[in-house]
Amino acid sequence: MQGSNARERVPGTAPPTDLKNAIEQTYGSIAGRAQALYIGGTDPDYGTPADQWATDTSFRCSAVAQLAWHASAGNPTYEYEFARVPAGREVLGATHASELSYIFGTTDRGIFGVGGRPGSANAVDTQISDTMQQYWTNFAKTGDPNGGQLPAWPKFDTTSRAYIQFADSGPIAKEGLRRPFCDLFTENLQRPKSQ
Image: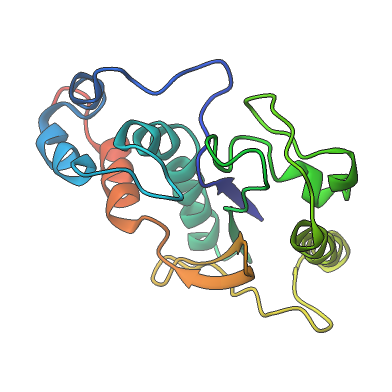
């Protein structure tokens, strides 16, 4: 089981101020394809193109690559994306570590993550926390997060790349988390660095 948050980056870093240059430095000869992906406006879940780049290249796409390698080896594999943003953290989004209050059932003490600003928990947060705790407990006991009355969490495989997203409406099964972005990220990992 592995996942990422909708808007997370390495703690203590900021999104690049010169996105074009950051892409060129990272992607080299395939930078033009990456730049074409990141052209556009702000996404309500993923933030600005620079926010998206920071999350894709630090957490999200590396998690997808690791999950693909794990699944390719024949291991049961589960991916999640945490996208719930509590009241008071709307500007920040679902940052690094903001899912921890939900997994450990401490939303009543404030919801934190990178950015330091606590969010205020409500009934939706409590329900998401209860659901996440059930999934994580099942996984710890059996190696499978599914069980009971929980919505089905599909296994991740390299074709569908199924995952579950924890958002305002609860857990939703989806496929191919930011596939074009993560495909290019993985291609870059495998590309000889002289290119």
